[in-house]
Image: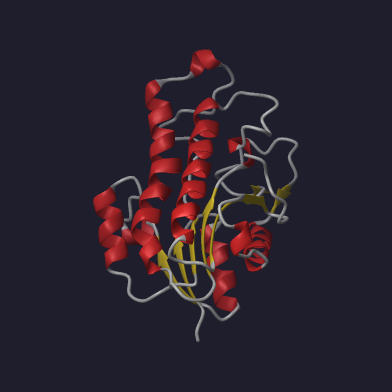
Length: 222
């Protein structure tokens, strides 16, 4: 049976190399993105229409969307910089968007056999790993996404016993998304990040569903 993958955000800095790597590995890949297909993950009508046009079942559905700066708002260094608009925008893109995709894409996973749903999160979304504060809106939007993934995994397990539903931290990848914020963090090329993430997914089983992993396959605390 041909391995089929669906990549949401396939034209982005991480989604694009993941798509290329999957195709190199022989997977049949269906792609959706804002720039190519006009998909707006924050608009449920757009998500429902786009996924409604997709046929068949997929062994892998991966959401590679996300944003760090929206509308010119940069990550906050102090609580006094938080605004309602910036926080709402972060939640719309980083939590609500992937959640709407989950709602409409999970029925595309086969009930029998191993399958996987994954969304790109970020280590800064971990509450237990947060030792320096700041980045309020981005952090909380990713923490909310992690909760959605964890909850969806519980529901999915009832009907898809071999399914894996996880949040992934790709590391600091050399993209426009991270260019201003990489600082002293070690960065990886997008192609290397794609290879790492797919290797992690390949090694996960149903017992890992609902958890949060980094690009090395190490579990991140919530």
